Amino acid sequence: MSVAAPPRPNVFRAAEWRNWSRTESVRPIRVETPDSPEAVQRAVQAAAHQGLTIKAIGAGHSFTGIAVAEGVQLLLDRLSGVIAVDEASARVTLAAGTRLHQLPRLLAPYGLALQNMGDIDRQSIAGATSTGTHGTGGSFGGLATQIVAFTLVTGAGELLRISETENPELLPAARLGLGALGILVDLTLQCVPAFTLQAVERPEPLPEVLDGYLERSAREDHFEFYWFPHTQYALTKTNTRLPRDAPRHPLNPVGRWFDDEVTANGLYRALCALATVTPAMIPSVNRLAQRLTGNRDFTDASHKVFVTNRSVRFREMEYALPRTAVPDALRELDRLIERRGWRISFPVEVRSAAADDNWLSTASGRETGYIAVHRYYRETRPDQLEYFTEVEKIMVAAGGRPHWGKLHTRDAAYFADAYPRFADFLAVRDRLDPGRLFRNPYLDRVLGL
Image (cartoon, rainbow, N blue to C red):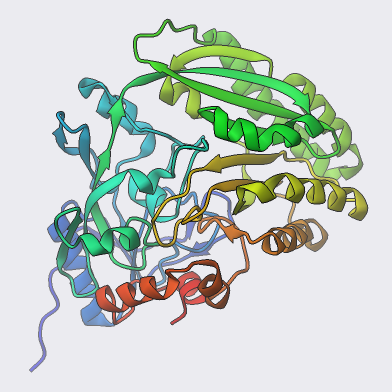
């Protein structure tokens, strides 16, 4: 006798889905929009009953296929907002579909903030933590290090609570689980009292920045820099943490709009599009961009300093290196670009993070520096994409670990050597999803079948 499948609420026919960078697309068999943990359970149970895979997606900001759902695609937008707040411990429980850009408003009534943030806030909290999103700061970890508890739906359709007191042995695996261990429905974050940041942005000679990178990454609260290929200058960004009530000197709204929207996005988009047609002009464009950016000193609420609006569409590869390897790797990248005669319009971004104990964190067990390279999304000829191929060789030779949500070609055999606890993570996957309900082609490549 056949068993009826569980009901499937909020189901609709799937259209083609594409990620933000236009590197991935898929037409799922169906799309569901659950509005409760129980609805997620029913969706997982129904998919299992029908022999379909199931994946949750956030904002689609990953450049890899980590969120590609070939079977059932779950949109978690209806699972959003604050579920609970423990003001004494500064811990906040959020529904998994909550977007990062919503957090300042949601946390403000409690005088709280995230300890650190990346420079893009369009992602969902579940997607950002599951892919290893991070900011910069030699003493601060990525977003996943701020997780103290969460609830997920396993491959058996069960709600599993993981915290410091419930199944604590799973915390270092599931904080950054790549979507391979289950569907997150809520997360509890360790927040901090709201604070202010002083931002100093300056163009500096690249050789001096590289020589001082290790010391500044360790000394400054949040240090990063952007290097424009075909120049010998970098735009440094140094953010210093101050108390919430410190005097603020924010950017003039009109000036900020002109710098960030007109120059950094509008003008730069036009220059990138023009350079795609006429690559020979890219060195001149980069020199112009380097002169038009930087030289700002302002103080504002932390999220207004951490986050930058990015509307120019691009493709990105980022590798995490042992921090001491970063200066020489960037010097080798500079030599590579000049040797190959490439014309690279997008700047290279360099950041840092503290070592952590999450098994698949790119900073797991080591002080880490990040090098990220980009190309304008319309630069798709084979000779243009060769940039990523050759950069990856430099990063691999330096002991690099690729960001899970950004372009790379590594596979499970590589990660077995790169991560000491990789086999342990696979054992947890076998426990929580033995039927591989949450698999997709990307996870097959990076984790194996």
